[in-house]
Image (cartoon, rainbow, N blue to C red; front, side, top):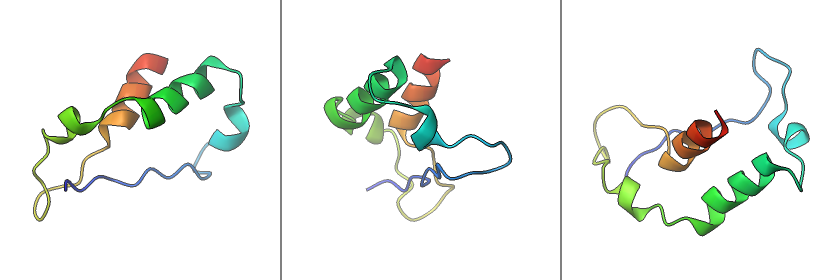
Length: 70
C-alpha cells in the first residue's frame, strides 16, 4: 500500500475552513463527493511504490480535485 500525505483541512495561514466553505448543493461539494466516493482510484495508486522508503505523496484524488477546481 502506498504512503500518502494526510490532508489537513484545518485552519492554516489563511482563514478558510473547508467544511464551512464547501456547502452541499454546490459544484465543489459534488466534485469532492464524486472523486472521494465514486471514482476508482486503484489505477493512480499503482504508480506509487513508496511503501517503505521515499517521500510521501499527495493522494491522486486530491490532485484531481485541485486540477478540476482550478
